Length: 276
Image 1 (cartoon, helix red, strand yellow):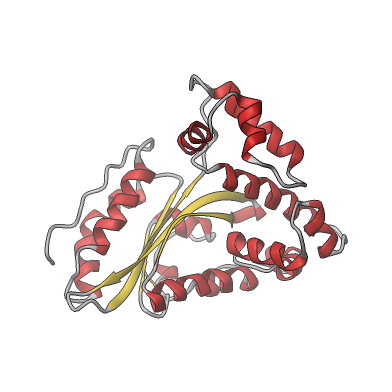
Image 2: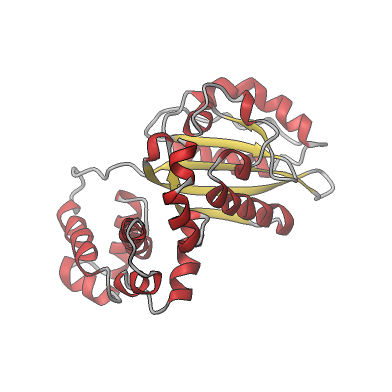
């Protein structure tokens, strides 16, 4: 390798940011092959297992797990990492959801792209759901060929109320939760909070770890997942949750859950209860 593997800081408060930089460092390593990278990572695997609320993994060019931390294994209802290795997300998550995750992996691998701060709804043992920010990067060898990928996904934590502009941000969050069913303009949020557009963008990212647009999508998708458990027509759900049509809703829903609304509904009715 061109340089030493960067050593992540494992403080719970700084782990997501540090691990994001760690993943980017891996992408710059350009090892001879994927096994050389795995050999180096083996030295710090215990550190990766020590960070709560953060999933880390390396996959091969077929999107199969080569390395994962214990947090990911336990999210899949496993007691150790070993049963994950050699499998894809489609193998270990409910089929209709896992297939979407694997499609995303293959896009990163085949196109050599990077996903940054992708807001996603994930599923945990016991049919619990939670929001995560995901980053995925293609890994290349010294010749520039893609040899695998690395990813990190960290849970969104409750925002701290100690920040000086907390009251304004809380008002924005409440406003979005009240008006998510229609288009929300930034001018409405600036008038409500007394903050500029730049301040809202900066503070929302710092406190909620989301952009205002991601906050709106998050609220809409939370409501949509609740309604998909009912027998309401999907077109009606799309309109009620602020989407202009069924196709726009389906695209956004799949981007954030890995599944279409229809498949998600079918999963709720069958595979989640069987899987967990």
